[in-house]
Amino acid sequence: MEIKRVTDKAFQKYGAVIEGMDFSELLAWAKTTPAPDSVVYEPSIAEAEALPICEDITRQVYGEMPIQIGYCNGKNHRCDTLEYHRGEELDIAATDLIVVLGSRKDMDSLTSFDLANAEAFFVPAGTAIMLYSDTLHYAPCSVGDGVFQCVIVLPQGTNYPSEKENIQKTEEDKLLCMKNKWVITHPDSGEPFWPGLKGDIITV
Image (tube, rainbow, N blue to C red; front, side, top):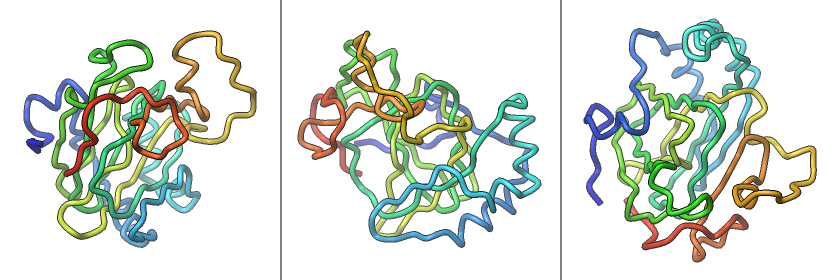
């Protein structure tokens, strides 16, 4: 599929590039985090959240709402699962990486999305992007054969195990699998989420 840049106008449907903030200390920390051949995700790391930039992110990006800072690293060239949250996600690329995105506005229903409507964007190392709450996304993809490393900032508590039973009262409840985490996967992904993705699995 065509890989656009986050500076392209097409990206404005999904998010915004965050400028005017110095993320250098957070990026330096990110380079020390594990980057195995498989994808790893940690939602909240105290060391990162203790950095002075965390206070700036809380105030300037999230309007003083509580946040968590973690990372997603590894090797990945496949998009067969997508998720969304209530609240924006800030991704800060410590390496070059690619994000595959969709919009909830393009969903066929509350529980179905055609991967033909997804788009891929190249995010250069050092770039911070804000993904809107209605943007479908998942783990970034690698550029070439190397690993990717990405700082992930989210509203506090996101992606943690639910403390309550998921009693399905609405169609959307089929997608809710953790705190503030609604997930759709492809039937051929092997993932234990709602199989609402249609079309061909995306490889970049």
